[in-house]
Image 1 (spheres, rainbow, N blue to C red):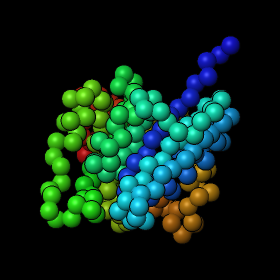
Image 2 (cartoon, rainbow, N blue to C red):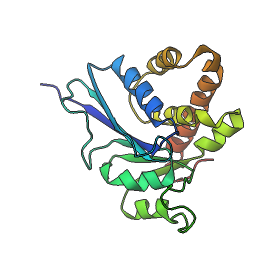
Image 3 (cartoon, one colour):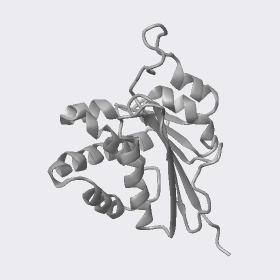
Image 4 (cartoon, helix red, strand yellow):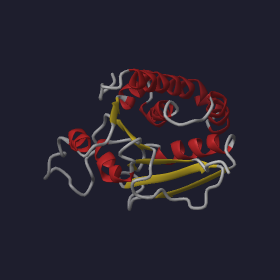
Length: 207
């Protein structure tokens, strides 16, 4: 009997960053090539600014929608603090944490407490493989900060086994036609960041 290979992806960020859109696109893309896909998400207390995490699991047979602690193949974090919040879900031996180089101060903290420092180093000291990418900077360079989530998906595409066709078909299905050009460009730029990360295994920060 062949092994039932399941891929576990966790996405984390804050409200308004496009985590749910990115999760939906990844789940639909996986559904075109895998027998089963399970997805679930948890929203923060606020529509914008609250913590958001989405679980995606796909393979031949998937019976539960949530990723267990220590079993995520990839954590795609849209903001630094959200990466450390969920890093314990990642496999220390083969998993990877992909972090957008962005700092969003939690709303409840306000101006009284500075943003935590040493987040990336903390996770590395714990034995995690961490790749930091300038996804938001790339999105701004394209002229629309909101395509950050699609840049992140482009990075992710280098780390999970889904075809180019699956990604392209899903993006064309889920993205409005008037926004297609910039989103496809954002995905392409993310793919480049991911390839650079893979080719520089000792480099933590790309860009």
